[in-house]
Image (tube, rainbow, N blue to C red; front, side):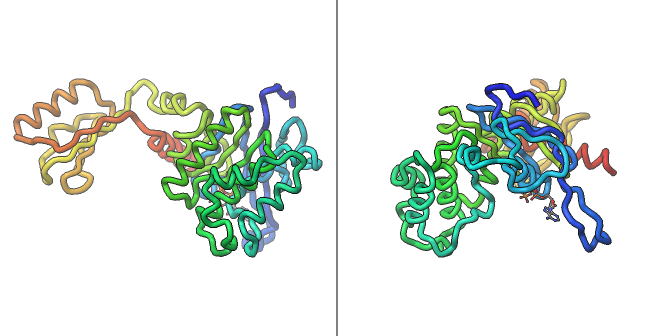
Length: 321
Ligand SMILES: Nc1ncnc2c1ncn2[C@@H]1O[C@H](COP(=O)(O)OP(=O)(O)OP(=O)(O)O)[C@@H](O)[C@H]1O
């Protein structure tokens, strides 16, 4: 594998088998069959997929925490399965279950983690930044999921890593903490770190990721920047969604046409979706005028990453079945 100087992680054709599984008559089960990914310095790379798609397995193989069954991985130019202490010190990891000792108290734990590094970041500054001070003396086992998540993130950053793995970084965070964590992730990216995160939340990928890999059932399905993925999925058709609120029970049949569907999604909430063009808006205006409809709100949006993801997952299901 040739390594470009901007490339922090290169995964090519990853395969992972687990087992033997009793329910499969002692056979092995292939949970990742072909996942490839490249992560660069100064970029947030997201591995996006539904529950069970193979995201955690992939990043654990990338860190050398799990042995792969096939494919090649280069992390900072080395095979992570042979990683030495020097390589590990350059990599920060925040796992989904946190892996934090339940009896420890956050600040004491972070000071201990910092003592393991030669040039750690300031525990106090990170604790301040991530709002850990408010619960610094409560044992980990008594913290909420979101509080544990923030302690785990601080611990992963203490060694000032060049590559940072974040498994579902916004899991359990309240909206305010989520903004705080996202801002920190963007700053780390701007400081040149390579950030690899997994998420099943399209919104997280859309807000944070410079480059997205979509995985499904253990396989890479597609990849690109968020605008590229949106373009790729809409192809030549501009898929748009218009939502509006009005009195319930209106007859919307005249707003639909081939490629455009209007439906009342709940009483008084309407959704007009498809390859909308200006004429559809003109027809909407006429429909309002002729039916004496005065919408209380109208919102027009392009196709979201969620639509892309669902369309891709759907097409994969169709190919498989
Ligand atoms: N040791 C194992 N034995 C059997 N099945 C496993 C094992 N490890 C993982 N799996 C299965 O492999 C699939 C992929 O798991 P993985 O945790 O990588 O998915 P994920 O995309 O991270 O999902 P989530 O979003 O739920 O965390 C899942 O169906 C999981 O149940």
